[in-house]
Image 1 (cartoon, rainbow, N blue to C red):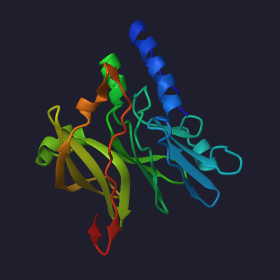
Image 2 (spheres, rainbow, N blue to C red):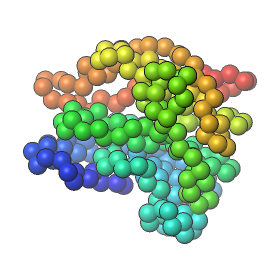
Image 3 (cartoon, rainbow, N blue to C red):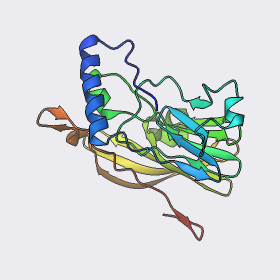
Image 4 (cartoon, rainbow, N blue to C red):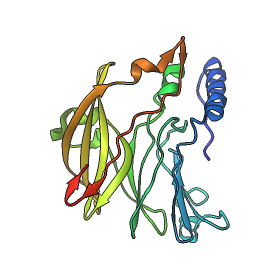
Length: 231
């Protein structure tokens, strides 16, 4: 999986981040990778890259390996350099597409370095080749989405018919955050609508314990669909 890239970060911060990285690995904060297997194909992501390999050999699938836009048969998102920790890293498969939310914020790295570590985005790839079909980010939403332009996409995308549904969280200062469901068109990635779900206490104040940042897992809401309704 992707190793953190600390290039451009001050030396004292790098030492702290490396120590945090070791602690994260020892505590299991890097175990949020949830693979999907379909026949002989294995798909998974680490927050920065999506992998598509043969389940027996571990080698990249031919269509992905032959795609010049991929790096060693892997799709890489944006310029994020530190894989998000304590996040649920999932992929969603259809017959034609692979979808995932990638590049989420690493809150612990933000505390230690003050750097912006990521911006969650919804990615839709061609399942056979790994070619990017479209991406969607909160900041590119139309003005009608209001404060959702500052939200972060999270969780597992849910596909039903021609729609893709995904959870977004919008901060209300340091203490509270709102939860929404967003809907996008599966073929084009065009934003369709949003629905406010609820507000809750933010985990931001729980990130510091005894003067040390802890890798608290984000309490990510997951979506389900049945009989024409989202749950």
